[in-house]
Length: 218
Image 1: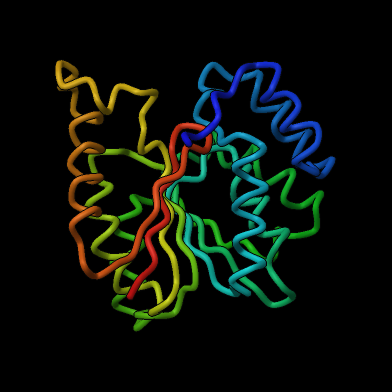
Image 2: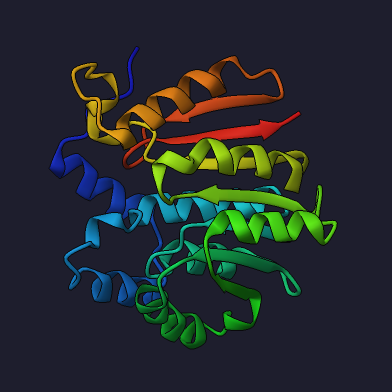
């Protein structure tokens, strides 16, 4: 039995019956839809899945590499318990400023620590500050050519039993097109091969949105 083929009509049903999207999340998604780069935003069902995972793990401290307009950060921050924190890494003040408006409206802006800097710099700084094993969950949705570099740092920052999520691992289906040799596709292909062989983690790749891998740190 294979995963069911998701027709547009069936996907609409899934969203209508399987996702309870908060009004603030819906407003942020609508605002992001006005941007030319709107396809960079995660889907509402992926946001709901990440929020559910946050709650199931009883996650308190979360790392996000790549924030865009802040939908994923908002979905996860709203799922965090009182006193929980989300450390977000991005290089764009323009895009993240959109999210900050809605974070505040949802009353979770105090849970989100936004770092405008190259993510590798922020992750290295956290390691220098002794944050090894401090985080329960991490989400990576940034420049694909650095995914492997993010991974090695996150393996140190995320606790044993915690999880690292990688977005876009199916890359619109081009991941299996060997004639496609652009830098991002090759980087994702290499990441997927590496994760599959890496005994430091347990993993599952899910056909959510553009593909989502969950790597549990052993």
